[in-house]
Length: 159
Image (cartoon, helix red, strand yellow):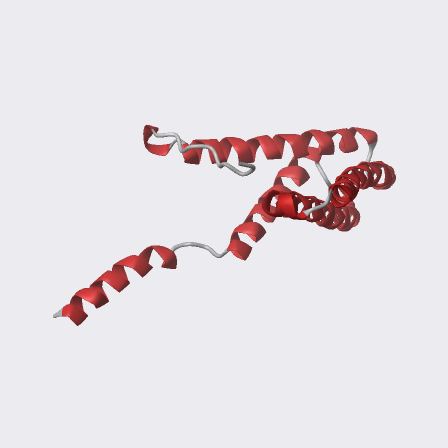
C-alpha cells in the first residue's frame, strides 16, 4: 500500500513538468517573436531581411557575450566580496565599465552597418521596435506576476 501511495505522489509531482517547455524552446520562441515583431515594425522586404538579419544576429551575439561577462562580474563580487582585495575590486570595476564602453562602440559600429542595408527611417524604427518589444515583454511578465490578484514579491538579486 505504501508503494502505491509513493507511486501516486511521484506521478502527481512530475505531471506539471510534462507540459512545460524547456529553456531552449522558450528562448527560441522568444527569438521568433522578436524577429516577427521587428520585421513587421520596420517593414522589411524579403531581400532586406536576408541581408539585415545576419548583421542583427551578429550584433546580438556580441552583446550577449558582453552582458554575460557583466553578469559574471556582478555575481563574483556579490558572492565573494570579502575575498577580493581593493586592487582586484578596482580591476573588476574597470572591466565592468570597459564592457559598457565596448557595448556603446558596438552600437556605433552596427548603426553604420544598418544604414548600409536599411533606410534611415527603417533604422530609426528598428531602435523604436527594440524598445517596444522589451516593453511588451515586461508588460507580459507583470501580467503573469499579478494573476489571481496577488502580486509576487520582487526578486532580491543584490541583497
